[in-house]
Image (cartoon, rainbow, N blue to C red; front, side, top):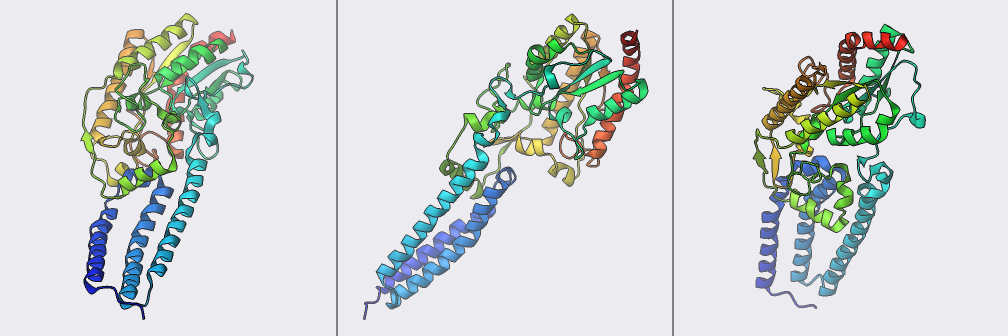
Length: 405
């Protein structure tokens, strides 16, 4: 008969195991909401695995300890059990590493990245335009580029309305926005790629991406704010900060176990306003040299006083982009920033005598029109198309007449 384990050793071991589990387990219910939203698959897989696996591990361990104490389980059995757990852990790590590298590394999206513009800019088929009619280039970020389920965005809607008013061949609207683009991206892209195409009108809508350049504490930033936006890695953050599955897993565990609230940054000074205005002025300079008309657009957004909980929950860019390991913006800062950037657009327009389509003041701030902070629902796309086309009709009438003559 095998000897029983000494009673004090068994009781002490069991007590320590229970105390450790009691101290550790509740902390997995204070998780980082950023991780749950940003990496929903991996974070939830690990979180629920720990929430289920830890109690199960404690129960099985106590059962094995009791069997060892009574002499029914040998030390070699415990060693075999531990070895099996280690082997399962190795298999799980290998599977997780494979999934991580397939989903999170650069290989999948490498063709989308650009060495200088971060994301490959949109183009026009054949890199040329038919000189018949008036050609309008819509420039901006994702709020210009993105389309609805049918593949139609607000530039297409505005174009359809203008064609009905002036004729099918009288006006051509080109959607040349690109997600992540700021005024600096648009300026470079216009000078290098679009200017040689000789458009007639530029519609320029920028705010949110330039505003986010001020979040030099965010996960997308690599250091203090720079006026050339060189601190902000944006979409290429996965390339410049490539990490293995092990370090990614440690990051998840830190966020899933007793997450501490981030410090809320409330600010009303935005250093990015200086390059924002400068970039717009330079873009207008280039356009005016070629006789191209520039029209600036203020950017609609959901931020307002007295937002409802569903509206606040919908603020993806605030919750997942204006946030870093230790700090984050609040709604009031985002609201203040959007207002100051809107005012900057008006200052540039007044100084350069260019027209402004004030979308922000005329666009409903509700979830019927917005899917998040600045992106639109189908109803929002419709409203954008209406507002832009209505404002452009009197501005374009004379220019279209001149083109036709």
